[in-house]
Length: 323
Image (cartoon, rainbow, N blue to C red; front, side):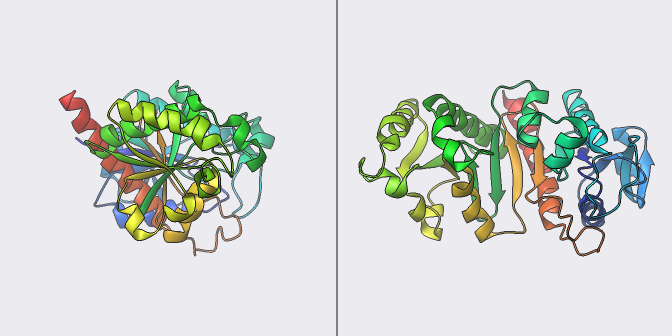
C-alpha cells in the first residue's frame, strides 16, 4: 500500500484550511494525504486516528491535535503558535518512522511563531533541517518552466557576502546534485550556477567573488564529473533557450533565484527542501491573511506541492531499491 502524505496545518488563521479542502476535492482520487491539526480549524474534515486510515475517508482526513483556541480567519493570533509547531514535529515523527511517504507543509507566519512560541529558526527550511538532524538543508523552488536553488536564503542583501562561502556553495551544489539523482530520477543532472555580481563580475571589474570563490568550487566539482556551467551572468540565464540547457539554476541569493521563477509561473511554484532524510514540499506562498476566509484562495500551488511530494517519494523508493 502506498503511504499517505502528511500535510501540516500551517497557521490556521491563514488560507491553509481553505486550500487544503480545495486540494482534497481535486486530488482525492489521485493520491492520499491527511492534515495534522485541530478539528475546529478544519470543520469539513473527517477525523482519523492513524495515518493508515487516510485513504478510507469521504472528506479531508484529519489527525487531531488539541490547539489552545479556535482560529479567526485573517486575524493575527499568537495563541496557537505552539500547536502549529507541534503539527510540524508530528509530521516529521511520522516521516522518520515511515508511516508517511512525505511531508507537505501549509504556510506559517514567522512573526506569530516567534512571538507566540519563541520560534528560534529563520524559517520552515531551517527548522526542518534541525528536526531532520542535518547541518545544511537546501531550498529549491520549482515550476514546470524552471527550478532554482538559492545558496543564501533568508538573509538581508548586505549580509549575503558575509554568509556566502566556498564551503556553503560546495555543500549546496552537492546536496542539489545528489537530490536530483535520488528524488527526481535524473541520472546526470545539469546545474547552472549564477555569479554574484553583475555580468558575473566581468573578469573582476565588478567584483572578484566569481574568480576567488565560485570558479574554484565549480572546477573542483567538474573534476569529479559534475555537469556544471557557470558562473553565468544572472540576467541572461532565464530566457527560454538558456533554461533548456540546465535542470536547475543555482543562485547566490534569495531574490536572484525567486524573482525569475515567480515571474514565469506565480501560481504553480512549489517549495522543496533538499538534503533531508524525508521528502518535504510546500506551496510557494504565505498565509495570505488578507484573503483568508473569503473563499477565493487559489489551491494550485498546494495541489502541485502534493503531487511533487508523491513523485519525489516514488523516485526515492526506486533509487533506494537500486542502491
